[in-house]
Structures are given as C-alpha cells and as structure tokens.
Amino acid sequence: MNLFSSKNKKIVKDPLMGENPISIHVLGICSALAITTKIDTAVVMTIAVVAVLSISNVVISLLRNNIPNKVRIIIQMSVVASLVIIADQVLKAYMYDMSKLLGVFLALIITNCIVLGRAEAFAMQNSPSKALLDGMGNGLGYGAILIAVAFFRELFGFGSIYGAQVFSDQIYSGGYENNGLMILSPGAFFILGLIVWAHRAYTKVIDKD
Amino acid sequence: MRSDLYTIAFTTIITVILGLGLSATADSLRERQVLNEELDIKKNILSVLGYKQETPWTNEEVQSLYDANINEIRIDEVGSIIDELGKNEDLSYTIYQSSENNKVTGYAIPIAGKGLWGTMYGYFAIEPDAETVKGITFYKHKETPGLGAEVDKDWFKNNFVGKKLTNKNGELVSIEVIKGYVSDTDPDAPHKVDGISGATITGTGLTTFLKSDLQKYEPYFAKVRSVNQIESL
Image (cartoon, rainbow over all chains, first blue to last red; front, side, top):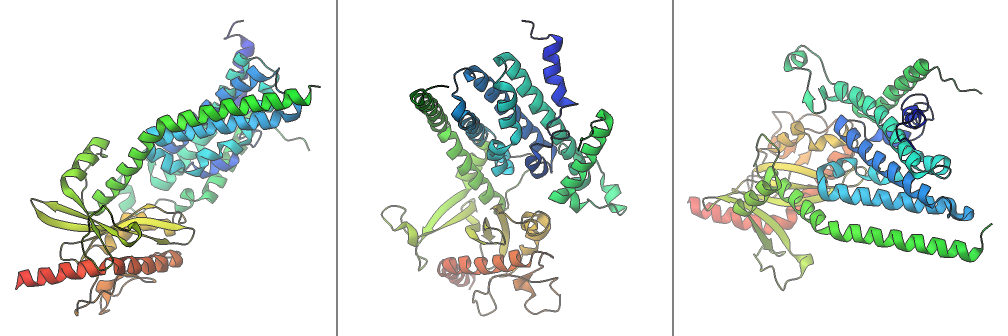
C-alpha cells in the first residue's frame, strides 16, 4: 500500500480544510478559547493534541477487531486518558514553564471531543496507518485554527507575534493601546466566530437544518 | 456477540497494561519534575530579592546564584532561629536571606492566602532594615486575567517597593491595598498602595493575608530592627 496515495493524502488534507474539526464540526472549542492568548501556548497545545490523537488512533485501530462492543467507549477513554496523562507528565518534566501556562487545559484534552470522536468514527473502522494519518490531519486542523486565533489575540492583546514585539514604542506613545478584550475569553469568542465565518464562506459549507 | 468472560478479561488486560505504562512514566519523570518545582521556587525567591538579568535564567544559573547568595533561616513562633532538624514543622517559618560579601541585602518570606477565585501564592521581600519593602511576587494564582491577575504585573508590584511596614513607633502596620489611588497628602501613604480597579476582592484578600503572614515573622524582624538600632547608635 502506498502511504502517499491520493486517498491517504485526502485523509490528512480533509480535516485541514473542508472537514476541519473546529471550524466545520465545532469540536474542541473549550481549549480553543482558553489557551490561545499567545501563539507559543497554542503551538505546544497543538503538538500535544497531534501526539495524543495520532497515538490513540493507532492504538484503537490496532485493537479494533478485539475490543468488545459493549465496552468500546470505556476502552477508548482509558487509552486516551492514559496518553493525556503521559503528555502532561512529560511536559511537567521537560517544559515546566509551559505546563504552568497550559495548566488544567492540557489534562482536559481527555474531554476534547475530537480525540474520542476520531477514535470512535475513524480508528474503529480503519487500518492503523490510515488511523495515524487521520489523527495527524485532525490534530493539525485543530492546531491551525488554534494558532490563527492566537495570532490575532497576541497581536492585538500584547502587540507581539510569537513573543517578538511588532508594535514599536512609538505607536504606543502615539496613543495606541493593547486591546484588553483580546486577552479575555470573550475576545477569543469574537475571533473564533470570525474565523469560522471566513472559513465556512471559503469552503462553502452550510449547515443544513 | 462476545462472551462476558471475554469482555472482563479484555478490559482487565488493557487496564493493567495502561496502569503499568502510567506508573512507569510517572516514576521515571518524577525526579525531573521535583527538580523543576524546586528551581521554580528558587527563581521566584531570587527575583523578589531583586536579582534579574536580560535573558531567561538557565537551570544551572538559578542553582548557582541561589546557592551562592541565599541563606535559608528557620525561625520559631517567637522569632528565635532554630535548627532544621528535630523541630515541629508546623511551628517553624522559613526566611530566605540574601547576602553579598557577608552583608545582608534582603529578606524574603513566603506569602499565601485567598484571592477571589482561589489561593494566591507568592513571596514578599524586605530590605535589610526590616521595615522597607523590597518587592513582591506571585507565582501561582487563579485571579481573573486583566483584573485580579494584574497582581503579578510590574506596575502593581512596583508600587510596593519602598513602602514602609512599620509606623514611627516601630509597630507593624503592614501594607494596605486600597481602592483607587493613594493620595500624596495622606499621612498613611507609606503604608498604602494603589488598588486594581475591578479587583477589590483580590486587593482586600492580599491586604489580609499579607498582614497575617507578616505578623508570623514580626518577632524575628523586630529583633533585626532593634539590632540595627543598637548598631547605628
């Protein structure tokens, strides 16, 4: 089987655009609002979610023919929860400052509907290699929106991009002020709403009621 | 449909494997995590005592700076210095004393208490005269970003620097976070700092626990002050 077949590429590409977990399926909103005040936290969160999602998808896919149907959700939850705890522990050991910033939200990846959703909807029916691609694709699709939200919040809330100051002192002395709303959660709601709107207009996805 | 026995066996095996994996990870990383927490505390003590540098500190820098300059003193409730061993932990308090060339440059004490959403943890630093504030810092709190969370911003922390803990009779009055701005004509201005608008509960919480924490250390600092007085005569 060719790993880079057009079908496999589609598995990775779809969640980035037309099937994006945040902007199209509106999953994982909680963390998208909570940890997007700065780009660096969003990037670390993205890496953690990509790792957890990819590994959990592969593990579930390997077990898919043996998991008793009655307890499949519990098994999926146990696998996901264990992986999240490991990610949390690794971060505490190697990136202590970042783990302080992410706080409880890293542990809350467990409740991120994307992870369990992909395990149940994709990994239970597909081979491990496909499940890996699906996990990476969805993780990156989630991360792309997260980083986009964080970009605008950091730019207008702190005047910087990825920690580097872009608005000079002259702009501030000229009367410009950082927008406090951007640092608070409501600011994230507005930015996320606008991004969802723009993305849906671009991909022409309309909810059928 | 699989048998119940299979379901139970499968679940048990998965649980055991995951459990083993988790405890192995936690165990192998514990040493590093504990080290990180200790370094973070040391970093906070150093920064409240006025140590700073342009680039972020590396772990080794924190460790060597701390070992070279900070001396941990344990005192009991009447302010006498006690040995670390063999004493009741609950009744002893730690003071972090910084010194350079055998001269004391400041004291830091841990402070903690209720803010609006949860307990706030930090350090409070005092000049060698034991009555002037050297600095304040918070390393853990759950206050609202933009409102109560301003406590760990420089503009708020800098307001404490140079304030006086004692009145002219040498009695402890602590520092009060007031509503609005401190007026220059207020005779008590040296004991007050500007509050954060929209964060009154955070401010009054800080006022309360700062005072009660300072009272615990007051016996020791009173001794420091009287020694200073004798030396200056």
